[in-house]
Image 1 (cartoon, rainbow, N blue to C red):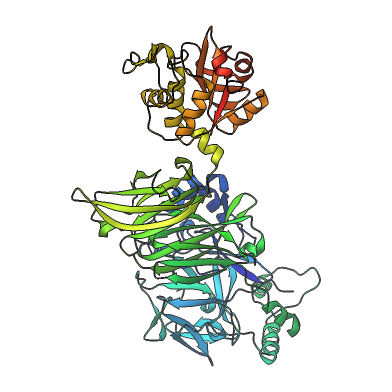
Image 2 (cartoon, rainbow, N blue to C red):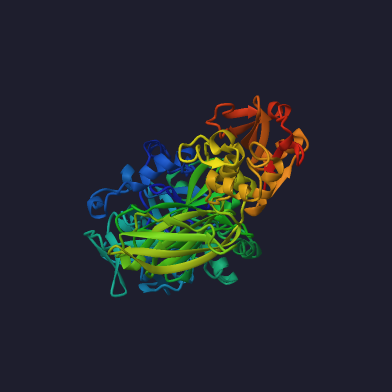
Length: 637
């Protein structure tokens, strides 16, 4: 059975199962050495890969290199290592391709007449490329079975039924924009001029062919039989151990149809490998999909994408989303890039931990409208808010006031936008920084001539990890010995020696619950209830409970060490009365490895930093006023 060939594009590490427009010439020294030693007669499979671990360095550097343009390569044949375009690859499936001249006119063969016609992707425009040695190829039309050939005079184009010599041999030269020059060693460069297919001796940068795969209508049974007969006449049969000669080597590159018609039809139903499609979502968004990537043998697919303006200054490696049919896709949004216009996407499959080139796509996206809001979920608790082209670019800064909708704007924060390279501004909203989960609102203001100008609003939903929030909201340290209030008198004493309870209350209320109070405020509150230095020195357990209730908080008594550890692990602050020679209130927050962090209002004299909870539990205050509401360990909720 004859060998069937598929094309692999080495310079860009991409397999020709897809649109090759805009391929970037990625050349690694080691890979080029491999290319040089590959025998064209043996048609050895060359799997072009790069290490996944080096994506952010080697591949990025390679992608950023500018390839030699077509004009400078006119005098170089394709076997120059920087101009290698194809190698033959054994494959069980034929891959018809279409040759499109300057993205408009397709090479077409109808009734032995060669012309340039509008692209229809039928079999008259489908060609099979077969490598016949020394990086030369024959082009066989799928509809007629005829080969593209140079006339005997060397100045025109014709067709032949057989491959007989140099007239049917073609080479490819790669251009920096991802297109190709199609070159005959005896006739010159192939181009289309006013729908006529002609040859020219000079190569200019605007003479470029795009090669892309197409799905064609299967040939009829009669065509299949005629093609089989024609091809079999060109094949020399030998013994079981066939002697390789120049004639048999040439024959082995010409495809024969040796299977039954029913098998051919069945095979035509098999999905094409690495088929790339684009779907316009809007003028600024395009969905890129690759079906059957690497025959399904991938663990993931990456889509490096950039706008054509200024090279790859805005390249982003997008992670493909796997769909139910095994395809992978991404949505490209021009708002995420520095420029609009022409865009390029290359597609790499992750195969055994390495990146394997699969395909490319090129398309056009419009510039985003002014003040467009783009919301990108980072996690269930985080949202990136981005405004593109704010005020048409006429801003010196952008502010994003944001709040959770629960209880109005009690947790509003004016977030400062970060300017991105394309002129957009963005912030990340984290529910951890707010009091509530659920619905959120963000307004966006531009700073224009020193004034705030409203630009846009948006809303969204964020979950909230309450434990994480409480652990983040640490008590705000106050000292009862602060000179601003230590000499302030309440009843029988001043706040300095007796104010551990109101100081602990203020630490929790301000730091953990965002209530802006000082020890003076909390002292005044519990003093107004008849407590704090009026019937006894200091403040009692009931004073603490009543005072916290007046601020909308609960002081819950804990009756076991396990209960204490559990509340601390859930992020609740705890006010505890311990024995330091006298009864003394301190604040505990957080829990890890049997320890908690202590905030001692008496200038951190008795406790500071990490302290064992089992130790603290074992030294409760012995003063009766602290036990009046139960064991003097209170979780503040």
